[in-house]
Length: 157
Image (tube, rainbow, N blue to C red; front, side, top):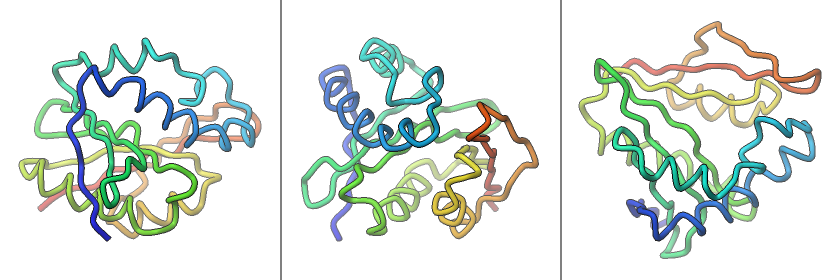
């Protein structure tokens, strides 16, 4: 499987927005987190994030098809945050995210710590992150009676 990351700029804002809605819509329907769901974010929010000097957005490509996106936020002390990462529903479960994490860890090879979060109810996501070496921080944030966010980190050697 040929997975590549395409560093995105303002020209890709609409494409990222469209994919983000498609990727997160099933979760929005399931958890009804209307205030926090990326499926409800505006195009302007994506544009604002693309303009941030401390973050990089990439479109994830599989055999030259756009299948998702990932945003990397540079924090202090060689700490990086993944927020968000998403794969279009038709391409989920094919090992794409696993390959993407390998690429970003190679690209941002000065990282001492990686951070991310997901829904504790989405066991597939939790399994993936734990398989990749991420550990729960112990921090949880309840969004509503259907979903809780769990925070992860991965310390690099």
